[in-house]
Every structure is written in C-alpha cells, then in structure tokens.
Length: 554
Image 1 (cartoon, rainbow, N blue to C red):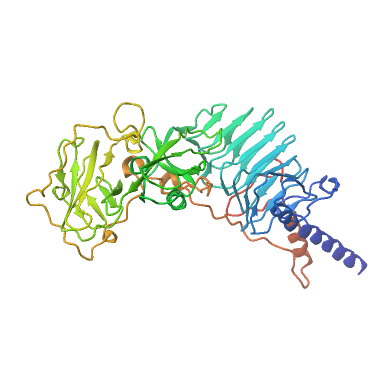
Image 2: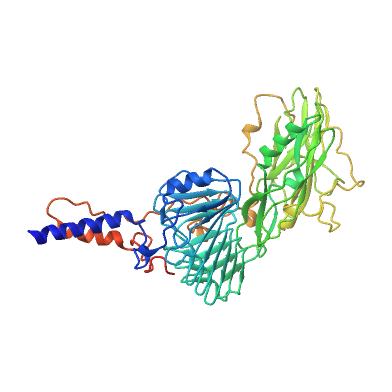
C-alpha cells in the first residue's frame, strides 16, 4: 500500500512539472539552474510593462508562455532582455507587437521567440540572439512588417521555419554571424518576397525549393529560382493625381490625402521577365506639407520610407493635386479595364443637354467620339471606353453642351502599354527624363465643337456611375495583376499588414493536434503517467508533420 502511495505521489509531481513548464519546450538538464533575477515572470506582467510605453529596458525573469490576445503597442524604443529565457506562443494565439521593440537574449537553452501559433510584428520590431547554436525566431506562421532578425555565434540561426508545405516569407532582414550560421533555415519549400538574407554560412538552408522573389541573399544560393522585380507607383497615381475643389483649406486637402493614400505609398512590383504576376504592396511614407488654401494645382512629394536594406529601389515621386473650379467639368482619373478604361468625373454633370467624351490616339492631332468604340458608354458621373488597342497612349476630354457646367474638361492621358514602365508612370513627353510633367505644348487640335454625325445623345436620367463596374485598381492580367494566391502563390502566407501585399493575406495560425493532458481519474495510473510524459516532450507532432527534435536547439 505504501508503495502505491509513493507511486501516486511521484505521478502528481511529474504532472505538476508538466503543467508549470511553458508547453512546447523540454525541461532540459540545466533549465532549473538558470539564474534567478528580478523582472517580468508572466505574460501579463510583460504586457503591462511594455504597454506603459516608458521606453528603456524591460527584464524578463523566467520563461514566458504568451497566452494573451492583447497586442503590445509602443511608441518609444524599448529593449526586452530575455537572458537565457524565451517567449513561447501556443497554438491558436498570435503574439502581436507594434512599435520599436528589440528582443535580446542568448537563444541557446531556449529559442528567443518560438510559436506554434503565430507572430505579427510591425513598426520596427527586431530580435537578436547571441550564443553558440542560438536561434532567434522559430515558427510556423509569420506576419510582419520589416523585422530585423539576427543571430550571432557558431551554428547560429536567425529564422527557423517549421511545418509542411510551401511557405512565403515576406519583407524582412535576416542576418547570421559565425561559423556555420544560417540566416533562414526551413524544413519546407520557402519563397522569400522582398527579403534580404545574409550569413557567414548559408543565407537559406531548406529541404525544399527556394524561390528568391524580389529578394537578395549573400552568399549566393545556387539552385534557387530567382525573380527580378521592378517597383513603380500603383494605380496610375502619378498620371491621375488627386482632385479637390478650388479653395479647399489645408485640413480638407490633408483629409483627401489620408483617405486616398492612407499615409502609405503603394507600388506594383513587376517581374522584369514578365512571367510572374505583379505584387501590390505599400510602405509608409514621409509626411507632406500642404498650402493653407488650394488656389491652384499643387504638386505633393511622395517619399517612401522603406528601410535601407529593402531589396527594391523605391524612388520618390510627385502627385498632382488638381484644384477644380466651381461648375468646371473635370476628368478625375482613368483606370484599367482590360483593353479599355473607366473614366471618372470629379463632379456629376447635371443639367446638360449633351455629353461627349472625345478620344485621341495620336497625341491630340485628331479626335473621335467615344461612341465610335464599340461597347462604350458615357453617363453623368463617368464613362466606360472599350475596344482600345495596346501599346498606344490615349487622351480623353469631356465636352458638356448646355446647362451650368457647359464647357470643356481637362485633357487626361491614358497610356496602355505592355511595358510596365509606361503604364506605371514613366515619361509623359518621351524625353527619357522619367518625369510626368505637363503634356507637351502645341500639336494639339481641339476636338470638334459639334457632335460627330451619328453620335449618341446623352439624356440626363437615373443612370449613375453605379451602373458601371467599379474602377479597377488592378493592372491588366497579362503583366500586372497582383497574385491571387493560386498556383505557386498558394503557399502558406507569412506577409502582413505592414507591407500590405495584396497577394498575401494575413495568416491564420496553423493548428496542431490537440494536447493530451494527464487528468484521467479513477484507476488509470498507467495512462496518467504516459500522459505526463507526453506533456514533457519538446514538440508534439500534428498536421504540420514531424518536427525536429531538440527543443531550443537548431
């Protein structure tokens, strides 16, 4: 009887140890001898310390099991010193951090940051592990904006990707220093998008295919598939500009700028070989100063704020804010519609007897009514022009007859080319300066004042712009449609809110098989002991496949 009681006592002690340890890590021989020190010992304490946003340094006093959904949000630079401890994120949980937070520690007896759930980093998050065979980040699911992840030491690993199936790693700088070090280690096929990976050993070490998509690595990676990309401003913003009523005050222009661009510069990254779909992404941009009152067209400088290591060149560009007079007909923008265009008017045209959208294919030397293009339509708020030919630059101008808005609109240019440099912006006047200044003076014939014979007559009625499909924000399919997640792009996404890549939605944390916890009651001591052993294993196999053994060791 005494021996049975002793056995029960031993089982209960083992069960207690399993529950107390951060699930997902093994209790290694030296773990209990880690130096005790003051600081945060729980996820709640760490969250409260960081969200006080006092900056400076926050010390961690023990392994943290992050089981909170509340995000960390800071504005002042802060360093989280983990020492020999680490942060573990269980499945179904995403560790969300926004702001300049640096996680530092040895990353040896514990991975610095490890997740069965997911990580979501933005706004300057970084992690640095220093020690022999250290690992900075180990995860199945990543969703971040421009993190800088580094590891230093013999056999060091900056990022370790676990699981099965292809994965996309979006927008990060991964560095590893030391003999045999690896910047990105993966047990699955991996696609690096807008990343830079550098190591003394291997930039990327994967058991599957490696695709370098708009990314740079050092040393070079023989056998990797490389996609070279060029970035140009998206949605024809340089050609169309923005529109505001003449006399709009600064607050109104700032609101227009914010609503239209959201404080970010958007780009299409095109495959220079034109084999892969374009990637639509955005980065923060510098603040812009506006005049007290918009008394005329104003050119605002759009300066992207990508980090220095970002592998693509993102050049600043100008966006014209057009000042539109009262009752002035004005073409606000033109967007792609396959082999056609959607043209939107700044104001609805009211009280008119006739509307004619004139189209020029030769730089304004001659004009045709839009009705001559089959399938085209002109409404009170916009027009749809079909049947345009590729590799031409079109000009549009609206003529309004009768009513308070009678007159001619501005001339809006619409290049429709296979060459993304032209569609994305380029040079308006073909002088190779790469600018988008005013249309060249001269050689323009004003469209005929009278309607062309046989043209359709606009009759004001209930039709509005809503009768037409919404303006497309996507470039044409053959060379500029953002990836849709099908085919090769259907890999598990890892990119995020910061880069806002349209082809890469935010990930859902992968789910592992449910844990077996040793809470069986009533005469099943053997099962209880077995369950306790399961609770102490460093990793549990789930649908991700078999994981590497060794807990915090790479």
